[in-house]
Length: 193
Image (cartoon, rainbow, N blue to C red; front, side, top):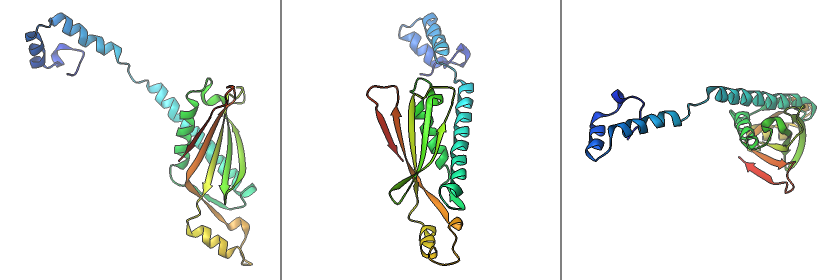
C-alpha cells in the first residue's frame, strides 16, 4: 500500500477494503497523513554543497598532478583515466564523513607508485584554520601495461629522447589509507580500488 497525503489520490478500492476489515476512516487518514510529515524531504542544499566540495577536491588533485609533472615526475604529460579523480574525491568525502570536522580536518599526502617505489608529490591541507583530525595517504599507480610505457623504455636509450617528452599514464587503481590522529588506537582504514 502506498501512503499519500490526500484522500482524493488514495485508491478508493483499497480504502473500502480496509474499512470492510474493521479499520476506521479517521485512523486511516491520520496514519496516511502521519507518513507525509515523517518522511523527510531531500535537502537539496546539502546535495549541491557535497557536489561542489567534490568538484573542488577533484580540482585540487588535478592541480597537484599538473604541478608535479615537470618538477617531481620529469614528464611533459600525465594521462589520467576518466573519472579517476572523481572516484578518489568521492571516497575521500565518504571517509571524512565520520570525522568530527569532516573534510576540513583532513591532511592528504599524495604519492605516486612507480615500479614499487613511492614518490611524494604533494601535501594537501584542506583547511589550514582547523587542527587536523585525520590523515589520508593517496597513492596513484602507474599503468605498466600500456604501449607508452614500453615505448618510453626503448626510446629512453636513444640520443634524441628527452626526459621531459615522456608521458606518464596513471592506472585506474589507487590506494587510500586513513589514519586517525585523535584516536589512541590510531585505526587505519585501507581502501584499494
